[in-house]
Image (tube, rainbow, N blue to C red; front, side, top):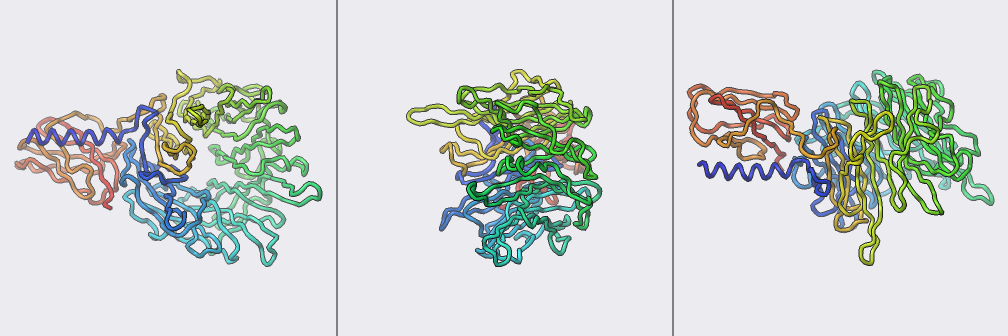
Length: 606
């Protein structure tokens, strides 16, 4: 029996070791995509400490199409739903993809919104799903139809999710098409619908954010008050001018809506409303990434060339919950020097203690006709004062033939921030020029200096292009990054999905989420493990006296315990998984004054 038990323990430990977060950035955790057929991955963190990772699986027969798949990851990086997760939808969709949204609610359910073509070939519709931690459907297994536009020519694109402070769900999306019989009058507007936690539509019709003479697009949602929300969006006007062709003007606005979907502010807030001449010099396509302050106001940043100098500069604005601008109209520049620098793609983080706003951007500093891209930051005080000088602080120096891109910023409990980025460079290998991507992170203190040594922590170093990197907030002293990558074809956005954790101290690898008083007892094993219904605690020899068993969740909270009768003489104890979601658990077994903790994995039955 001891030999058999030892062998079982060997295989168990080997399986679990592969599931732990890797300490090696060249050997990241495989999440899904065994056939290298996943596109557009996203990640969402649950309040319970696990993660959902989603993606579109490419279906090549008969025509290129996509099914939507979802994977559930334990806090220590173990995929819980098999090698590719579970299929959420196989409804008809386009042969090309627009953006979608993945979030987690307070109960730890995944909430997803995307568009498909199940309503017919003329136009797309938005649908939403909610999936429990065990993989079962919380709402209708076929999803909740959010809206079918009465105008057949109107398509729905890129839905995003939001939550109100009362727990209701919000879904906003771009809707574009021709109005009435005028097939030359193509417009885009924004629709918003509200759902209850049970998936019921709370508004009889979605609210609509139109501009009759222009396009409204790229919505962003933020909770405020009990059940209100703030919408931030872009307005774009286009006009054909003889001799110049199609001309565009872009503006950025915000508005607050109440629980019923009615506007709260008398007028929309004008985040960026430049004069007609200057408004032509915002980029044609760009995304804003606002962050909220503790009072639930917004900081918004963007880039434009308002002086027509052929150089982009970055601006920031602070908006309170009453719709008042806290900084001057059209924002404050991160630098007073416009000429000679191209500053784009800003990301922000806000320190609620110092009340400072950090902005980091990609900066191109041309030299001799060649491009050099580095990462530069600025620290704004509460009143908009630039604390890192008129040029900002260089965080990653300009290097020829190497481009550095900021992905996001995350504030830490120590009131510094972590910069997640992508280093892109090319190497000549044989007859080919190959692009490499390295995902990395830096921890920056309030003075703009690196906290870690060396300053860069590499997260992914394999050869190839990293597509759609996505980063969670801090949980259990770590962040998790997911991305798509085809390690057999570097420039192919369809591939597999990988993930890597990063701890606050700059290290990668296991986080050791176990309850206290843990010892190793080679005379105790749990089998089968993983299991989807029940397992046995097996002792290598008969035990006498009481056996106390306690079950803990990944965060160390006790969720179940029992004691076997003192006259129990068998050498195994039954563990029933009924009522438990798929995930990682820890079993503490106490007998004969010995305490042993064993990891127990519950999977979803296929």
